[in-house]
Length: 229
Image 1: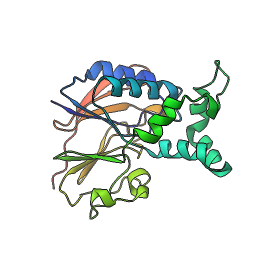
Image 2: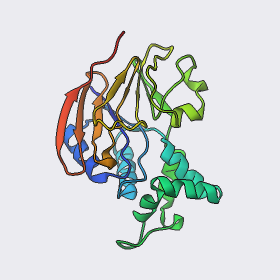
Image 3: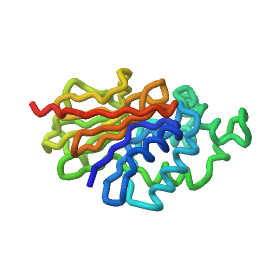
């Protein structure tokens, strides 16, 4: 059994498919996606389709990221919510729903099943006996069911994140321009910036092994050494 966490995908369906084919999760593995499935990359629609397909075929945990929060706010909020989302990759997401290449889509072009997925199928965090999986981060001295939304979805990676439970936090959100996972006391960040010329990362949280692919199909792997001090 592996406990597999996949970092921020941001519309990069090709990289996601290449990564899944390489890692080859089985039904014995836990599979957890850390959020930010949409925006910036070219195929947000395809990514959501793939996640829906996966959830129909096997147990999958899909966390909510701040970009999903913004996409829903853009649909139901005011003009400023829409402007904010479009400016951070929402334009690319809508483009993936267009009726033809080069023609952008609208909110009406997004299938109801995709809205249902974004609104109803995503969770704010996931816990196991050893790990906490979250999109952005946690307050160390706050129980998980009391964590505020700004921390779960928006705050950036600090210098340490040791949760009171003693569990290791696995998160995304904070882009690691180095292209490798970043380890701090109590936590690991695996947003390795696939949409920006970096890599999409899958981490086996139990062993520390990780696999990475980029949008060109290149592959590499390595190991995370957890900071136990």
